[in-house]
Image 1 (spheres, rainbow, N blue to C red):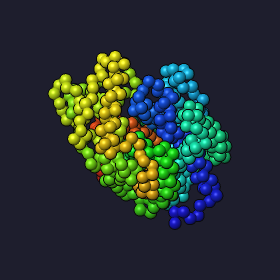
Image 2: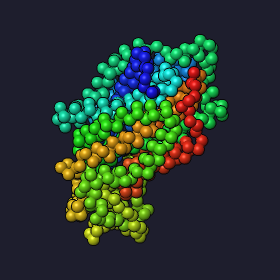
Image 3: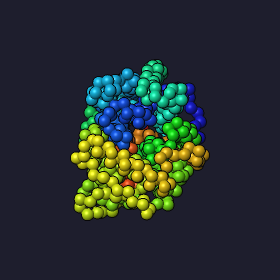
Image 4: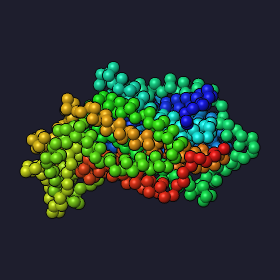
Length: 545
């Protein structure tokens, strides 16, 4: 029913808005897909874990500023129009992404390289902060009554399709280039391709007309003169903004980023799977599950936005740990068996154990506890800490075998290298004897099972994300809709969701358990399910004109 009677103009609006947004998401997500390569080129001096954290923090920088982009462009969209505002955002996004493709690395210009990289990420974040609200509002205001969920669900597919496109382009580049060339300069090509995507997107969007709802409001003189004040400083609307954040977008965001990005990071850095295989399996899962954005968007026109999103949050929170455990079992069965068959403990003076999180690379983690836990985290070994006497040197116990760490603080470099090499050799031998693999044996990967598990994670994404645009649009009045819906969406997705990879990796390193990073999205999803169920209204039958 919701899909019947779509006019040619309505199809054009959906296609043009969605295609342009796909390209913006493609630009934005190149960073996370190329996290390890970007870290290696722009964070000289950091170890492997530190480089990963740097790249994740650079990725997160774009998310942190998204709410500010929502405020800036949301205000413009409510005052001058939807169409011209998201033309501005796509220009900013396209040019800043292309600039990354020609940006000198740390080896060429030193510390200026990561500073410029982060500055470009901030520009991308500002642009994306204005893009989504404009596209969602524009499409919803063109949709007939009873079809808003279906119409806006096409916008919801764009983030996943942008990720899918980035995975395919990067995988093709890696397959056509040598590893050495790709990691040195070939990684720039996917960023430079965005110039072509920018030209196509701008051409398509120039053909669009302004939203009829906005045109009518403007003609009647009912547009807002102060959308920021009306949206956030008047309690009646500000209350809905807060409820939309904590009762809708925060949970939607962590489910989205856990099901796609954190799953990818988990397979690459924890399970040690091959990059191309990981990307292809994730791309297959995205291909399987992406149509369900439209399925759940259309279903929300019949049964409502709220129940679908709340059920998605609850299902995700209840099943994340079993699903990621199954990913370990089918993705790296040797690691799974080693975890089941061995108890690993680190006995150390608790005063010498720190949270090893230093994205700028100034700190050196040289205590015997940090050396021991860092080495285990790198090998994806679950362990528990046992307190020891003050001043004692940390020891790792793997089954019945004990490996002594060493105190590296104050050691001259030659001595530190000698002790480090000896420790790495002893620990490596002990882990090998206990069955821990250095990398996943790709011949043992159960690819159909892994793809099925990833598809379930993406299916949760489609449940929470498919109806969210229609719900947000319907919660707010036309005169301040762009501004009001953009801020909770981008705080939820930019802060709660965008910071998930860095927070998750940090929690794993701090706790010694490869599944502890999942506690963050589980808690946030449960919070949203409770607040959204109790306090947010159903809106599918509202008149938004």
